[in-house]
Picture 1 (cartoon, rainbow, N blue to C red):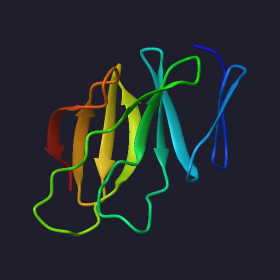
Picture 2 (picture 1 turned 180 degrees about the vertical axis):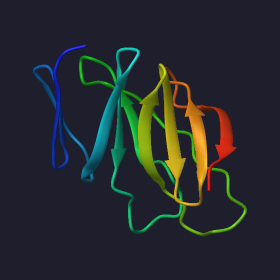
Picture 3 (picture 1 turned 90 degrees about the vertical axis):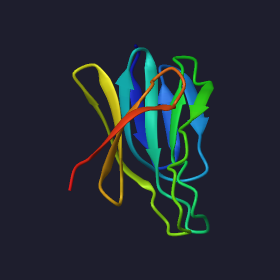
Length: 112
């Protein structure tokens, strides 16, 4: 993969620049995908603040929403690449194993 830099809400992958709607909190590379964690939107209870981009800067996916029976806000608060796998953690203590090709949940585990 080429160089990846983040500045505010701008993601740069090589020479491709992508302006996102909110501040980028972190970015990780896995399997030629750049996953970014965005600052959660203040006006929503739907947690979709992780996105995956290709090397050309094209949006490939938005993460699967966190299932929740309540209307409480429960955004993703951390992403990480660990042993070749992509993980996303939510505010309530769940870790989700994410398919880096689709953004879908493959598994989950409670960590608190």
